[in-house]
Length: 119
Length: 108
Image 1 (cartoon, one colour):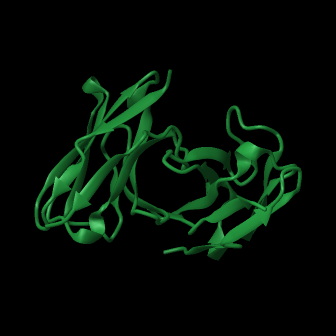
Image 2 (spheres, helix red, strand yellow; image 1 turned 120 degrees about the vertical axis):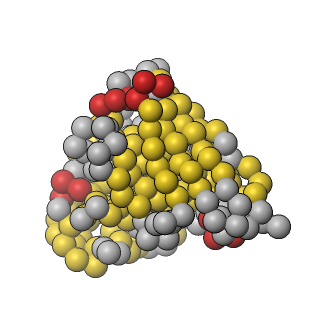
């Protein structure tokens, strides 16, 4: 069964840091580019970051550039998102999502992990 | 950045009716890079359509996608109770992915 499982979410104060993880199983993780997509409470979807299968190419949305760092470990079938200098507007459910080969759509998706930035 | 505008924001229909959801781009989008997702409350999005018109694995044929350039459409030919959800279009262009704001399909 294809599965992505996020972890690491929680409550953090403004200015704080958090590291999200996404564990993949049931597919060849090293062949997929990966993404983080977030959804603020009651709002729509926002793409956050992309990393290619070999980690050679990385993109960020302007809203997180310079504060978030995406990385992956293909040996561990895992994706990460280091989030620093967190702001209230970063509060959201964070999903990891895969893209097969050169595709530019997202499938599969994890179930999401909630990050709340509040004092 | 390409902005995707979905209409209507909310669509109220009855089971068995046909649903037509629109996604308009602020500039031309390659059809290869346009996708549609379904999301139900408390769940992750699910890929429905990729490449503007290709159904993802396991998606019923009542779902179809069409369009090109700046105008794209998701059509559900005969609504089933399980189809009432929020739908998002998504595009990729120049190292940037954007989503529309969503169309919520509700039971009339």
